[in-house]
Length: 219
Image 1 (cartoon, rainbow, N blue to C red):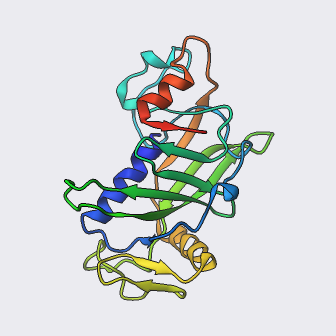
Image 2: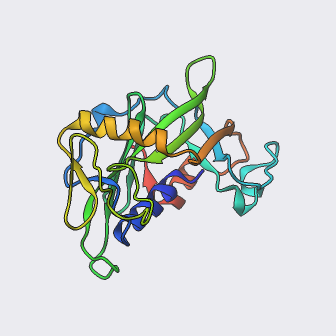
Image 3: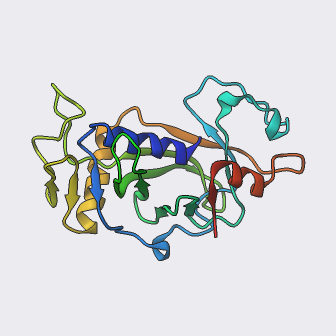
């Protein structure tokens, strides 16, 4: 489960014309809102929808590329910082909400775009310590998708959301954002899930090397 990559894909979809996502110019959440170290079990996570076969007994570097494995560091508190200066936060709550900061360069297809997208997260399974073992996630939408044009802005935005002329919508407050995430959860019946595979072991790619390869850090 390359979580950062999946959220980046959603940001790319928004920038390329998917207009039904909740966005903001300023963040609704800060690092103080993050889930903390005991919310998600550390170790290797993989996509649960893939047919890729992964031998959990093999070192992580021997896994096939299709595994798209993600390493949750032992000290991860719910925040990643990327090398481009953006910040990704998994905020506590029910559902949890991922705040994905996006930034495009001057030579991008849609240049100099900066803002935030939001995704709901559910823990479908937890271990005895309450840490998530299976996570489901979905975009926070502005309202029910249009049957004729699912990527277009909804015709019926939910209460507390204001449609933007250039696409997307803005929440009046964090409560409206959370309501949008909750209502979007009911609409998304085939959302991606990721599951915990196993703990990190000696012989695996190190946390430092994995984070560097992803272009992110945890503190």
